[in-house]
View 1 (tube, rainbow, N blue to C red):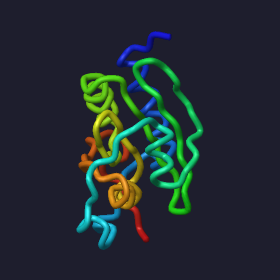
View 2: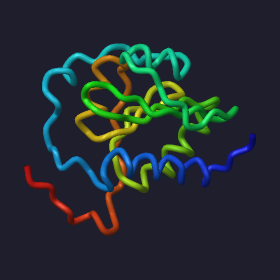
View 3: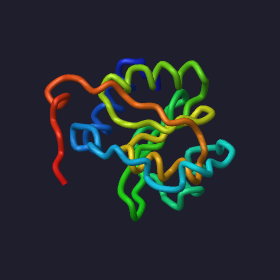
Length: 145
């Protein structure tokens, strides 16, 4: 099955919007403690990475270039995607980040969710935190809590 960058980015955007409720978390916190102790960046298959955070992924995309699934844990849901190449990962991430959200980026994998979720995942998977670009109808939206 051949998937184009645009189709992959569009699929990621739809999943991201569903997980984050069409906007950023509005939470400016750091998630407390776990960011201070970041382990070495995890590697492995989608299933290996999911096992590290104790979830069983619901596979949404299973192609040569990308495997993507939704994981549910006690703290909520997130998308976990693995890539065949570094270039494919970067192209997907560049397209997906146009839709906002928070990203935990590792070696040929990305976890996508709200800021609190990816910060929490970083405590188990390592990786680097990246933020998407927030623009459009929800750019000025603030959540009260």
